Length: 403
Image (cartoon, rainbow, N blue to C red):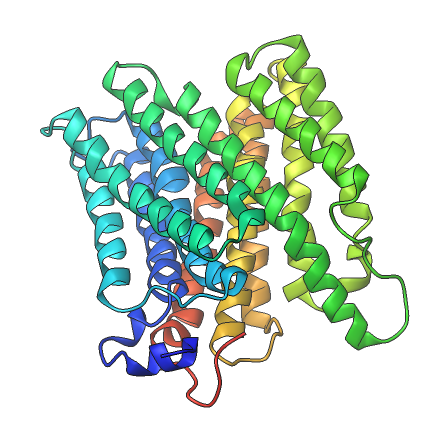
């Protein structure tokens, strides 16, 4: 077998296991819905999970280290073969990674009567295994340029372990160092990987539209400086979240990444939501940095949780949804165009983010705003499962490999 298509054709098991994006994007989307339904039920007093985590920490972990881990796995298991020229993980080895991810979700959700070490090991097994797979592919393929992606995945996994450590010690893990490190790693992934794909996909689409301004080539001096400043600001936020230095660094990073975003010609993409949404999603990186910087220097303006959700639901939620929809269309042979239904998914996420931010700005209205945010989230990811689930479950094209 010498091609991706030949390896996928040789697999006669479930179509879901023919490529990494299929089970992990579908599983991530369904988990995003289930976790939000559970969270809403807990907020309303309708249920209580038998978890050792406090409710807010479970909610934060379910999204950051549950949902996002699945999307990262789906993205990397699909992208790395393209980066290295090696064959993708398919079949039962892929199914094993999915099973480990599911075991982790169950272990955390039913951890009240389980040893903390067992829960942590069960939850960390999948990202550790994923890191091993990605490391092997990068090393064998001599794709040294993408070792930075492996490093960010390693930091993200360490952050998950620290989250478990905080929870086991009775620390409020939702605002602990593991949470901040994990979210910081996620933001850096978006800044680094998004800094490649947003201008690249934009340039490809604009080139087909005719003459006009194109995105500035990525990773020039300004881009590198902006990434270093963001990295420094995130490290300050992880170590000393209440420091004046941290607040100033976050504001500087936010400003630089707003400038970086303006260099990618996003204003020319408004007629194609599949491209424009990438710019909007990236915009939540600097907007979140600015909001957190302001909240650090002047506590009470947004509320720390409200500011963080510009990164959590905005940057992470919208960017992952944008990548999942685009990758699913591209790798299942569909036209790279956002239908009205897909555009509605993006709009639902934006409504969720704005409602959650508004809840921090107007605490007296927080109850119904939280419900609106939850409804927007459910509409986005429930809609993804309905619209894109059939594509993820159907047999892949037989004539040529997806690109």
